[in-house]
Image (tube, rainbow, N blue to C red; front, side, top):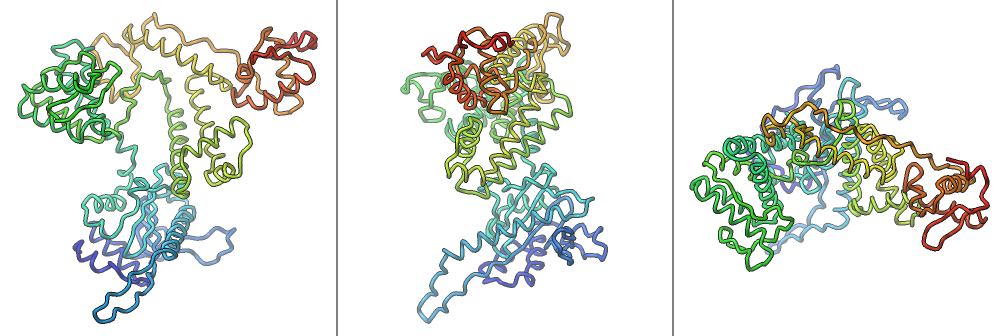
Length: 567
């Protein structure tokens, strides 16, 4: 069926005949997006992998004897729940007078409720599927003849369906089917839904960028020092990213590269001039004739005394192809010097699964509660960590925003990360930072000696490899990792034991300490702060410690011998 005929056939109907219209609408939609129509259903539901009215058995606890039915189901692809809203009928138009427009208001609110209920219904079906059927990547909620909404969960858990690809693009109206990209996206939902996984797309884009830059790198390293080639590529990458996020005029660098493919001899002088204009502090020195615009000032010395290498047309074309990708989809870790730990398969999977669950939980919360913001959620989470009391508004955000679940997921990621580094779970924030600084210095010495611990070997090695001088075997002079610190005592949960623990700490330290230092001396660190502060007030009241007046506390001379002998 042709797109225009389909849109004309289903547009502006009053609706209200959901069962009569759903199958016809979806069958014709399959024709429009170029996929096979659903198959006839059989008596044995085990083989009904792509059918209308797919039967699923309710849970025994629901006490519902009759099976429920999914409007359209395709195994390993989607569950579709269809509704058909009924627009209020118009007043009949009189001769020489147009019919009054329909009023929104209450009808719009009712429509939102209808679509939310349909989404919850589809989410419920996920857990009624046969045990051999995995949770599908997509849920589709359809208002027949008007709207298709897409929700995705690529974790395989069925617990994190969120707007796909985002809150701006998850809703497809009928007229949007004129766009080939929209029809192609729907076709993938039917045929290869995992191809729409953002993580897979980011990996594909990143791999493509790395391969193209590696071509340029190999060409230049035949004639130039590797360090200078690396600096040149970093400048190219930053310029591409600046163009993509709007720090340079739209498509300006891409057009410059396209022109240089035709005239390669212009590449080096033109790009050199561009970079030096980007580095100029004074605005009057930042007018670049190639863009016919004043540029922003890019400080930080990246473009200080920058110069571009001459390149042939083929290598400039590789840069042009890299510049045309969406750089917001490129995994920044391929250029990241952060001292990551060596990761094993199980640790990688644990971190990935937990991080994906965290991401999907946040997406779902924001989709279900448009008035909430990510900043607001984390302000409440921070207040909870500090032990502060919550206002009524904050308590509401905690409840609707699933902040307790977010806290649990973050703590799980923290534990897995510390385990990956081989560090004690009780390390405080300051101790973690100290170890990261020490590890970063050790990695710098390793790289100077020739060892590079690639974070993304498949991406980084062809892009940044420096030849035979860079090895994968650790040289003998690589220093051992920082020594493990003794574990910190866990701050007591009992309010009576808390002042005693603080007194023992002060007596054993033999020095004055601030409340922040006291909190960091216990596990789990600064989150102990509010409770430690209350313990300090109790000790002051009974004369067990002395306030020095500068924010530090000292154990009183009359403290118990047991307290002074405590380690």
